Length: 381
Image (cartoon, rainbow, N blue to C red):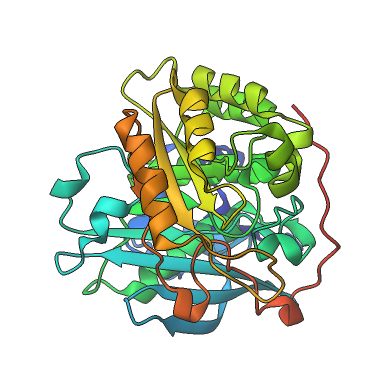
């Protein structure tokens, strides 16, 4: 018996096939287990009745099915739901479910799809975390002010989707989209994020299309190129400024990977996918990056890139030094972009009354989390 059991939630199909091969089992066992775990939501090997009793007995000695533990479950007035999950003794992460139904017109304001959004009658977007804290120290982000502890494992990343699907229940709204826009920089946890993405896309697990899974990055150029080759899901880039000197301040990673290099990586990302666009996220900060001149500079940057611009009103947090742009400034900025032919959407703020809105995650959980001070991690290509 192994001292440390293998968490089945952390294995994609290839990993499961390799595991079963080590037991002398056929590859089809991987598909069986994927279906039980992710489609049936099984949390007990005894539920997997198409596995023989001897095999189930052997698996009990080798594996476990373990998801994060729910510490809190909050529902906002707009229906947004936020969970605080414990991933080990002393570390907590946050995961947010954002429903959009017939009663809610926010479907026209979603950042994660390029399909005809007016035709979407229901969407349930799950925003998941990839790290405990974050190393990048973006100045507008609550998580970035809280420091960093560690990367999440693949099982902890997939476990957020697995657990949310169970908590939502069969009779309630289901997850139709996943965005890696929660705590952490996904590309700095590449080796654990990649198999998690593959589980999300696998037809025998969640069966999400690539356009319904969005990875958001602050702009790690070498890893954007790797993702393009390995698993090209929808790409969102936290841009937030059109000039290097300003982005250096807002997104310190820009000092390593300036805007020109980042945009070249974005062009490479979509060159093999002519019908896909890169989503550029742009936080609206009063008097910082919200002027007509900023809008014109952004137009010049993105003119030759298939792009969608997501304007995000700043969500205040206790340590923050910025103010939210006025509605008039946001509308003016959007109109300038639209007049130039750019697709520009203003994201509706969701869940801000439970600190679930963009940039607010982790603001009240540091007492449950051991963090190191913020800083920029070393990037390996």
